[in-house]
Length: 148
Image 1 (cartoon, helix red, strand yellow):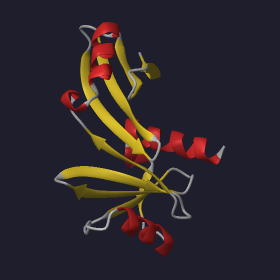
Image 2: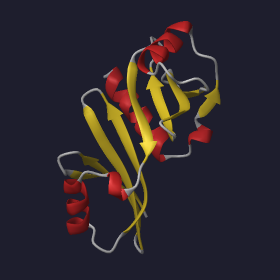
Image 3: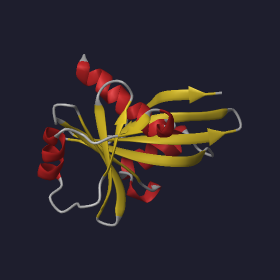
Image 4: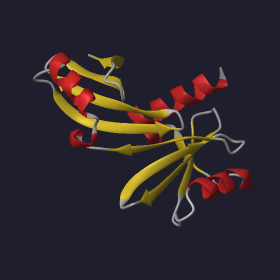
């Protein structure tokens, strides 16, 4: 149950205004050690906490890209996020988007990578409003959140 709550917290952070949920903080040494184990070459890291679930977000630059990594209070690595372009999506995801949402504008795409594979959060905008689609790397699309 805790992992589901953490995953939802991370997703909410990705897809909503992080500024309202984030607070600058200095995490415990266990979190910093877990970060150093995952990202050995990263130096300048900005730490924040997200929500009330005790999730730490580390923002940094990796391979010339802005990346966020997420850790629990115990130092468990949850995954990373980065904003990507449509050309970086798997072809099967692009094909399904074109079939199911032809003519709808893509506003943003975030890749959420974790140990068991990536998923993609795609914000679509049309005259009817916006929606966030969660796509798996096998091309499955699900409506994650709908805004009128």
